[in-house]
Image (cartoon, rainbow, N blue to C red; front, side, top):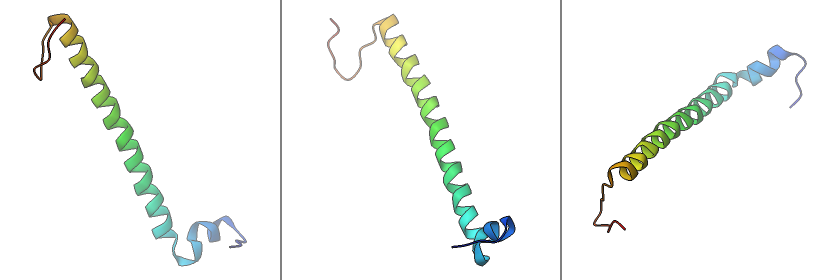
Length: 64
């Protein structure tokens, strides 16, 4: 495609709302995934430290 101005580029022949909307949704999902991964990582580290500190054994594992 060839655009003569930035306005035409953002309008995208009448499909700009769908194109830029899909970019916005994708970006929001990626940011949400990164934030959820950070939260889960912190929870996993806390659980690992708690396990090491208190020697708590789960899932029928034998502590050595």
